[in-house]
Length: 158
Image: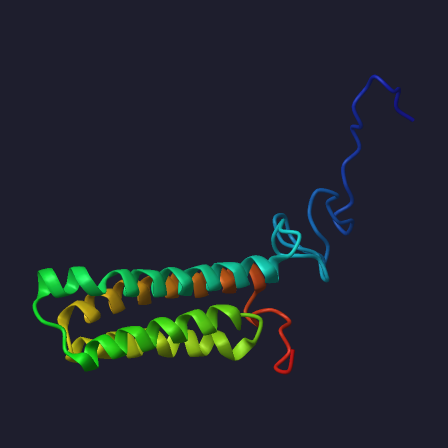
């Protein structure tokens, strides 16, 4: 037996697991335990929904406020182009309110593609589409990191 003031000098048994290392089936350092949250957020699903809604809301705001500067700086906008801008902004606001549904994330991705394709009507829509597609891709990345590959527990009918 060793005295309390002396360090334990015994050699560990080769078959005995190291107390500082995780055993088989146990999470390693920095990994969440099974059933444990991946992040320190109290409501990770809500935080991710808020990020998606904020991204789509900002997109709608920029599109609507950008109509006049686009007309002044980039040439004449046709009625179809203005209609497309307003339509995309309205759909973005509606999708921002539906972020609880899993399909809304896919619809938001399609919306970015529609905005990029709007570049055939006016070049500035292509530029805005690329910018917001990159922001949307980052939001999807954050969603995957926080909620994991499954994307959360949003049920289709909820």
